[in-house]
Amino acid sequence: MSSLLPSCWAWRRETCYADPEDWVFASERVQGKMPPWADTLLNRFLQPAAKRAGITKWVGSHTFRHTHSMLLKANGEDIKVVQELMRHANIVHDESIYTKTLT
Image (cartoon, rainbow, N blue to C red; front, side):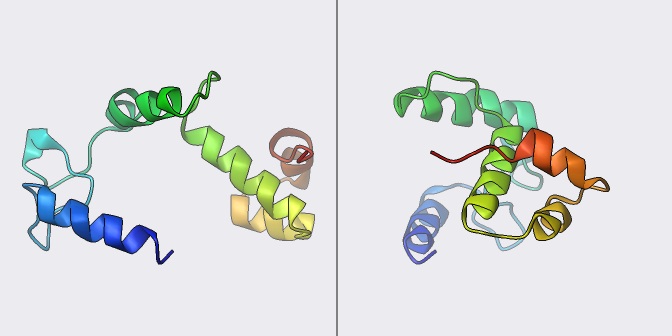
């Protein structure tokens, strides 16, 4: 976490939306008072960053959910804890869909 904070402060100094009530990742359409739409974030930022990182598969918001679940399981978390953190009603969802083996 400590390595992220300097980057956030640097971004805060560079952005034109640096008022306390502005969003960190702000929509230009509403002058920083709301975040951008999810599709905007995916198309303008996440997909290009993934491409620059050499990731050839599709990366979207559920990629982070899958990764979170997989890392929890790989670190030895109980499947019930994973279920709670993922906010699923059925544990089968976490065991069969979200949690893959980490190699």
